[in-house]
Image (cartoon, rainbow, N blue to C red; front, side, top):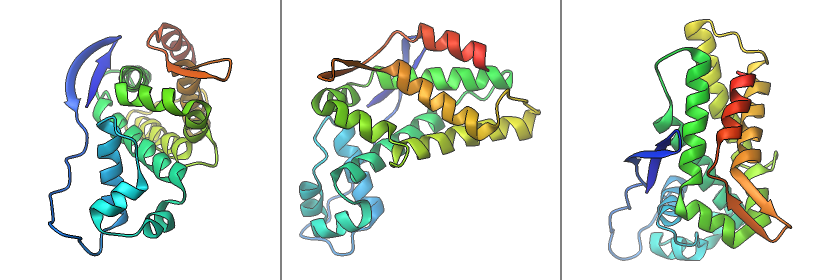
Length: 210
């Protein structure tokens, strides 16, 4: 379960993991990519390893189908993390106040929620630099999807409020995501990856940028 966090304080538990799929009994036919992703997100948020074999068995499909839809395990994991990020932005997005303040508050709330999420911390701890590669690769699933969602937020502020960012919206969205990467994930001598819960420096940089 995700808990939304504002200013470093957990304030609600309204961000919940996807509802488990109802039991179908037997081996169901015709499971969809969306069902696979939903099961994978459920496992991730429960702190369970995302296992394509287990998901395929539960949904009554072959691992080949999952591979065809998502590629190797990193592809499925990337799809999970991309979906989780979009879900967090949708849930944490601040909708009142000045445009720059809303964007800053949303980015900080998403970052703080990620930094306090135990299953996310476990994933980073278990997979270390492999996890960082899945999250930060420019040609992966997570970073492009994250940039696109943040750009939606920026473009909405431009269109609705006449917000005039200092950078073009695509570049600003990319910069914000890279700042989150830089301040939320901490790597120690290539052997340990952890989440940084002190986001005061990120707060200061966002204030200067936005």
